[in-house]
Length: 138
Image (cartoon, rainbow, N blue to C red; front, top):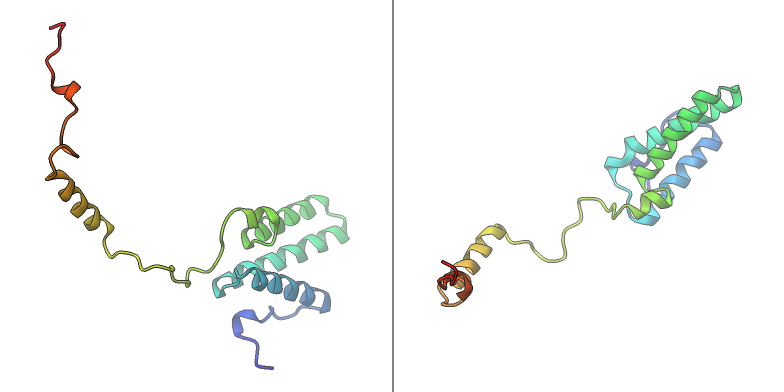
């Protein structure tokens, strides 16, 4: 088995429990296809928030526990680890290429189409007959 890439290595100083949490979260992100090197700091912050919530809970600090748990939940949602975060949209890395090539300048394509329509009588530039008829009440 090859070496673990640097951006997938867990932060230093984790015990067995928190190492398992790291690996589980990383595995979930990879399974969803959303893991990207840019998410590493966010995943570390998520793990630290979980650790802070656990430490505050064991010490009986309910306010700090609530704050850290809410932060961990918000980070989990941003990472797409919660159902709400997964529903928010596609989180595939930006490195993926679109299936079809995109035009270099889509405005130029529209300008050519408009020019073609503008020179065809009775289409784009023609005014409706109701706009050009004289009004009877005048």
